[in-house]
Length: 209
Image 1: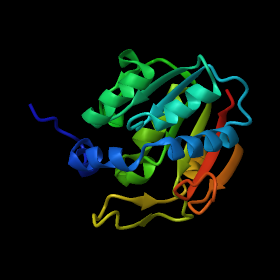
Image 2 (image 1 turned 120 degrees about the horizontal axis):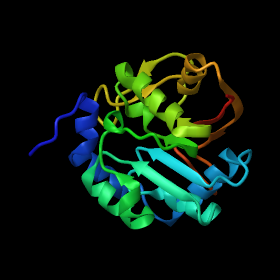
Image 3 (image 1 turned 180 degrees about the vertical axis):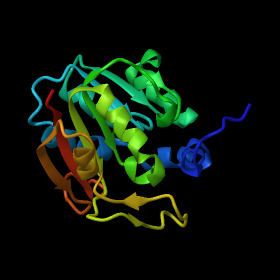
Image 4 (image 1 turned 90 degrees about the horizontal axis):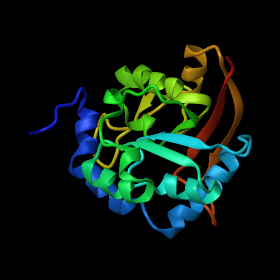
């Protein structure tokens, strides 16, 4: 039975395009870049014991986190069935939720909830839902790593329209949740000789209860 989704973007990533993404985003070079990325982005977080990632694909971020923080618990939400199957090999079947972020529901909280390169592909009308998932899933820290733009813009993505959006995601979360505080931020450049990332601007937010 074919799954039904709330947005065209979900169906896009759950299907063939999402499977093609797998082959473009794996390997030792990406793992090395991710190690560098999280080492910097999480330098203010002391001994995190648990993470949840929204939109994890095959788990390249999880692999880096497992190396940086041995023994940490990692759970993840991934919409694409093929990617989720590979992800289970990295963090365990019981820790993978093969579903849309919009459908994910849990009372469990984690030291760090994070999203990286996913908000840019979310239907803008549904961003508030994802912000809520990130906020409610976090005990203390939220890490956002996305394309940044001071005002919302839509950009063609590999020949597809309405599939990539840039805006100030972290700023919107800070406005939505007054208890959040900006702890750190930085930029990872695609032309970095040693550890390239895809022009990601990252923001580490902290919940002050």
